[in-house]
Length: 361
Image (cartoon, rainbow, N blue to C red; front, side, top):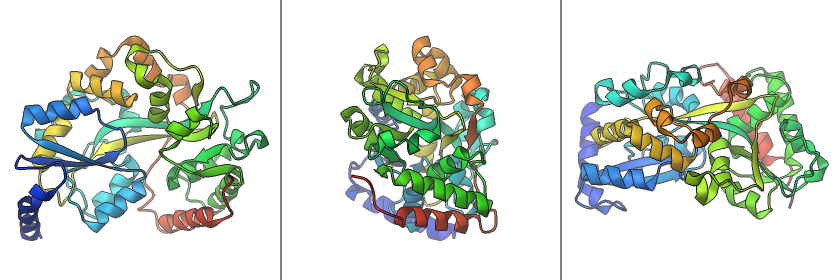
């Protein structure tokens, strides 16, 4: 198997000149979420390492998994959410990490985030950034008496046709579960069925499943309430003035008191990576204090790099970190792949949600 892999990498390196953005210099191919790495950070890494970085993006973990499963193209570094890392490792799609090549990660990881980490020993993955899921909403369009800190707002008839849900199986079904007082990681068929019925109730009010365009549609007024990631929402709120902390007053972000998801996006190296050493360098680079600070100011979300967090402007730091009292309601999305029948249960539930009824226009 190793021989075949080396031959495949040799063939790929011979064709790397044909890849977009790569010439005769070494090329690092990264697969991640949209707007998730600062261009300035990328340019600095390219300059310091004499390489090119080519970034492709995905909008869901399921899309990412399908592309990796297909095996093409060969990425060197991928940033999936933590709950899917176990599946990638089980199917030998990623390699164990060599900690000797990422000393800054082992040195600078902020232990404050340790309870949120699934791969606590960093065997296959290293934490990149944490996201909390709640609502990005338009203060302009919501009546002043709106209780936005509850999943029940998705059933409010005043917002019929002005809601979007994330295009993510675990986030959407998990929201249905938490709204009913169940665990976001439940594999109880009766609880999953109840969650499906709750999500279908929301879908009758919603415009679409959307993991990207709500960042433009909430400010424009096309969407009033979007199930949304905290990093995306804070980017919208702070906008182009994020470094000066001049937030726009018409957009807000809220976390449901019944529970919300906590998900780390991780850095992993695929088994078919052809430039793993460059991937290690990039991972380690992202954990240096000044790089992490610049990256957090760009993505407007916390990376678990303690010296980087300490270097942030206090007002910006307070804007991207969640208060401990609020954080207590959060639930970490965990892997369910090793539980017999769990994946089939979720996939069937998701298929029913996707195919049921028409969207509101």
